[in-house]
Length: 591
Picture 1 (cartoon, rainbow, N blue to C red):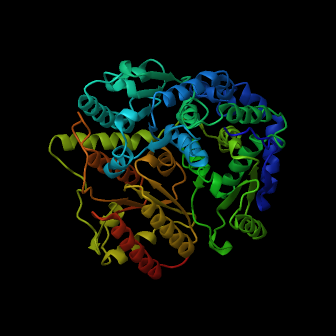
Picture 2 (cartoon, rainbow, N blue to C red; picture 1 turned 135 degrees about the vertical axis):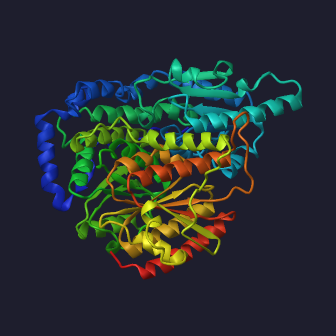
Picture 3 (cartoon, rainbow, N blue to C red; picture 1 turned 120 degrees about the vertical axis):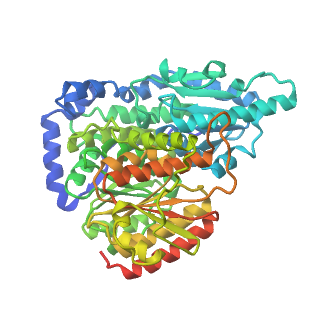
């Protein structure tokens, strides 16, 4: 078991440069208006004077109680994990999206599995090859399926459940006799009570159901059953994790905002964004780097609305100081005793060049429990600085509605995957433009069309890669190379996410946040598609519809988006895209 560590409970180290006066002014305001006290008193006027909005916010503040609430349940959580091990299960698969999958993924990537406990996998992509890679090498009768969905109606977890249920039925038929007579003995659910639970197929047959407090939103649910059930299955020391979280929760009650580790961070994030430093870039040690993806979804979905917000930049390869624009702010997230890989020197150089730098050091990886709390508090406070409701997601449903409409059309014989003719084809690639590109005269081939798209970037743009393709190590590496090239040649911040998972994290920011995104959507063929048992369409058709729905939602907001179809060989398509982008960047102006 992991030993508890002494959590660093002080405020981060801030070097905010030219934004320091605004930060100090907001600190003074927060002190005069008792922001920390009002947060823990659930005073919704911290965010809004509208009673209707305030009532909705009041129903989303249960995360402030989560560490205390679940610390009282440690014994039963650990007993559940031990019982699953004793029954002979060897693997658990979390089927979820957004906050329901990212917190378990942080714990999996950071801590691995303790000896004798389960391997943990996270399934959060409808790409048929990824579903196959997650499930097909596992023994269904030794695999625990965890369906994690707050609403109970989320399409992706229910599709994964349909796939797993059918595989379990076949496996049980083959063995003829088993202690569990139906697939429900291999499935647990993490959801909300009543309607949410009732919406999940077969819910009354599951071996266990874990009901979260309904006043906790999905992205604020890391320290609920969402994170703690998977943590119990990998043998993580829940006492240490929640002790860390409770210590931070106590520290965040500090009335003086300057001394408060969460409130001070939130004021810095919000103030930096208001001053134009809205590209919040994480420089994280490798041992805790997965935390960035969780923070990305928390910040993006919470603050990206009403045309404003913070653009979190996670996983961007490090570059030279001169390659970063004046819209950046940096978080140096380090682990005591770790080899920073030159990131401390980079942070020092960035600070010397005038970029704002925030430094946070963890004493031990178990202190991620504290960081979950710190960043939840900080994000809520950043919402107060920005004047937005950090607990709603008004634009998330838009792409979902468009996806459902496309699937319904497909059921009636209208495939409608890409209704337009491509702008250009070549080297295995096909490019499809938004209305603005389609209504102007194409300049030529693939390179020219990429250049024409990139030339539409705004002075403070971020370049977003939306990859509706199979997540693999090879695609990860190719996306990193593409991001480095785009950043170095344009001076713009870059983000990357696999679809449809990013729709449940940064998707809200893309459509509701600052209208500065320039989007490159990547799609592919599905040489080995996979049916969703009992559903009228396959995983391949689902992910294609999700890509098309998001494309249409972004296009409808007059934001620049270009689809690059990679064909059937994704690795070859990514290599061709790298070459074409390099050539396109040669033809576009710098900056």
